[in-house]
Length: 294
Image 1 (cartoon, rainbow, N blue to C red):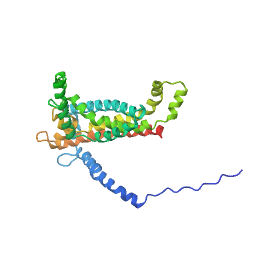
Image 2: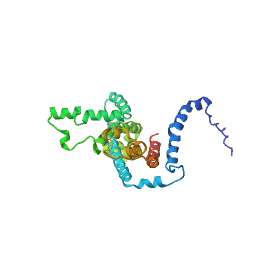
Image 3: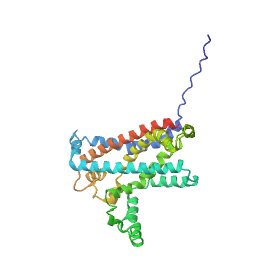
Image 4: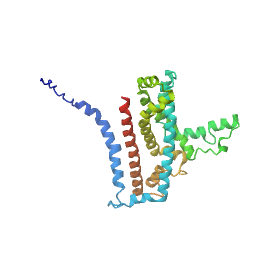
């Protein structure tokens, strides 16, 4: 009996110094603007005004107005995440699997990249100028079609008005994230399903959706975290009429009447925990989906 020749072990390539130097700006940026501020928030949530350890700040999160703000923020984030997932998935599916001209894909993806990052005060102003009481579309509907949008109960400065505004960047973000997963679906899977007599609906129900389900849920968690942390758009659009948790946090830290830095640190700590859990769920589920799509 002859022994198989022993293959020499490959030496793992060591990153060169230039690679570490190239990574240095990102590491410094992450340290100064992510890691250190996060640690400062966590420490501040457990310190009193004299610098001693306390749990009073965290216990203050049980106040009724904070629970109300948390519930409102969760509802807003869930609504925009679910609607954004459904609409964004439909758009991405039509573009990648629907047989549309390939020339449409480039402009759509470019627009999605811009719209996904268009938020804050400019977005709020754009919606006020478009769908406000004297907005461009509102006036056109009233003067040309005789349709008074605000007589139907619609109000841009309300919960559903804010949902509509958030969808402007939530839907494009879903398109950007889910399109690579749809592109990764193998042609052999569709051919195998067709050879077994599966209809298009059966192919999507029994093959596509089970494979993409983790990616969709992961993106849903990502959209939830994205909406939960948004503050500039909500503040510019609704002011203090909607007591969202980020707006309440801003009032606690910068406000003249409700100023309580300790409670503000505790609110920020709670938001970090919630968005961190959502981001971790997103990473885990998307990593699970990518195993099928490699």
